[in-house]
Length: 396
Image 1 (cartoon, rainbow, N blue to C red):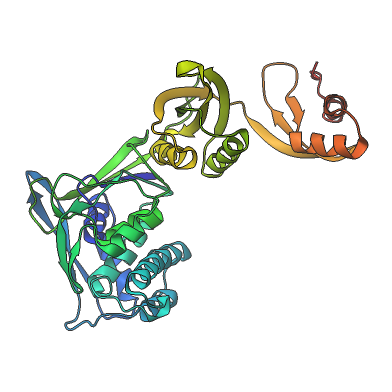
Image 2 (image 1 turned 90 degrees about the vertical axis):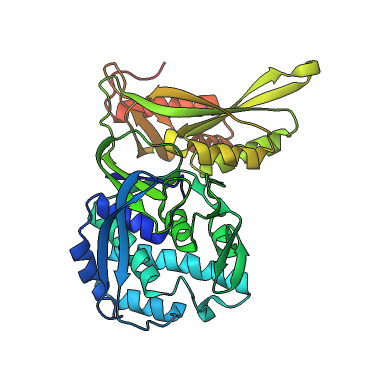
């Protein structure tokens, strides 16, 4: 199951939890899970409300009176001891760890000494654990989010009046696509920022899916726009008969980096999730030589990777082009050859047998050790691998 969170009007813990309940998460079962945290019975009251013409679920957390602010160590101990699934526990701990680290940085204290204020209230604890529980209960295995609207202006907190986004929120959103959004005030809270920044696998547009449910989670305030976070649940599409896969091609033209800098940038982009990166020489204005850097990426990762291209290269812009590709089924195997153990890519293609190619790193290593030309080593390995695999279609 894939989930997409629309954060165009901001996101908070209660809005995200309400959207997941509206999309089908069982509030009664969630109450039982929250009650196991050891803070007394915790109720989840859901009501239908309207925000700027759109109706959604609004969640209120009820608990025993006079809940104190909670220290990070106390919250951590409670989550670790609670009878939660390992997936829910590890996700909730990761979110609260991010919150604790951000608060510690803002206030100049050690992480274990952090005492939460708004975040430490029982409703925010319920929001964090509740969202992690709901995602797991709904069977979500991949979470994608839109760029996050932060809001603008100021917000009043336990620490006084702070700029929007609040300092902890700003730290939590590092490396995350953001925008000011359509309304003033705080649209994204620290809890909402921590949940999405920690749990999202990618950021970008609504991914291709077959939608099975849509949930609307309403915030408390009335804004000039709908104060709603939306969650789309769906299944990823089956591969088409044609074998086509939708991807995105990113391009930028560069004339200010050396070859070494370009190579390093390409390595870092691959490490950041690019499916492939390559260069092509071009002639730029005034006859200057340059290169076009091209990066292929999954469409859901395109926005984040385009930002990374700019950061890695210093380029002033990136072209974003929709594309499709056909990928042959492949696997990597190891074969014991006369030149030692070598890794081979085996790809299924039309013909009497699979295509078998030795890994370039292994070819280069063997060529160095033997003092032979790489082309000779590659050819010998391809012929030997074809024989070992009974391939009637050896490379030519």
